[in-house]
Length: 558
Image (cartoon, rainbow, N blue to C red):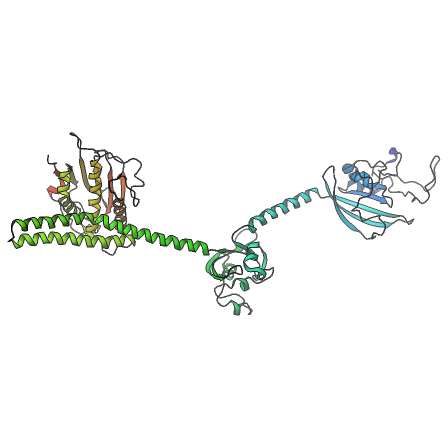
């Protein structure tokens, strides 16, 4: 179909106007003066015309006055029939020629050109290839071919938007990121690196001259083998794996040396094994602030450990110090009654005092080891019945005053446990002290059950011995998880430091044991603590517990 066709029935199958003779027909008006002669643009059955009509792009032929001399079917699909309108009116609905059109304007070049434009109504985008030429009769014309690039344009816009988004992300990161080729030259990087290194950071610059990451970089970069001996980039190129290291570096943006963390990641296009490294991604992080925070945290932990040590020592030596005071006071009373006290009695009392003094010294050494997470004292097989006997003898007077009914149940032929004897005494004293404190909350009313149970037996299916200490107090609520935390206490205003169970937990860990808490004991109803200790070598003969230890009842004095 063509603008030069006035009779619609004259269109052939190709869409171009049929051949016209150069002679005037009856009723035809003579051509205007200076107007170009209408030329035939196709003939019925013309194969070229059919091909042009099948093309997905629009094809249009214009004269010097922007008149459409011929067009294909795609033109009408995109813009509708031209209806004798000039190209700027038919294509864009304008009343004057397009300002961006480089053709058919006075003084413009006659060379082929390409422009892109967007249809204002449909939003379609086109890339137009225009070829100006002069017809046989000397008339300037332009053949325009417009390809629909809407999908390409939208894809490009989406790609640009994605690139802007990723650029916004990388430029606002606190770390520097760069893409390097296999010769370690910079191909891309974010703005963080530019801020850190200023003019040193530029495209195609060698990254090792910027980072100074090797001890021999100045020599290495001037030789053919430009890799430093400890070069992380070279390692990633060789083994195809990521590497990292930390070192000091002076940045242009700071006066002081900063601690830098360098990470290299290989880029392997494609899939499958055996892929070669084609590029490297470098990530650079300033970790100076983080290291300073870590140092402050370490100092705070040391201070906390010192506080724990001081509080633990004060807490633990309270028991032997009380015994020491008791023994010294008893000796003083004996001397007041009899100045000529028998040497044997005097030696016995002094021996008890020395024993408690040795305990205090051992406790201080043990607390130091626990805070340092060390155990300088060797672990030895310890008879659990002997330790229970000694602790109960030391606490008998206190239990009698508090009217506590003590029940001890130790299994026959109990194997020795592997621990430190003095530390085990500390653990048992702490557990019994907590149990008696729980009974204090029951009051002094008649008929109140004030019982404590000590039970020890091999743990079935394991090479361990379980020591159980339970009471008939109120039990625990939601404290079973936090009960072993340092300085956590359930004693309201009663002077508890909250270190006893924390120390017990630490000592058990040093022996390779585990301690846990039960909120309500199935038999007594109060709290229970279960201490699982490793059994000593079975080849060693275990010490048989006495009958008095296995079944003992300390009744309250009324």
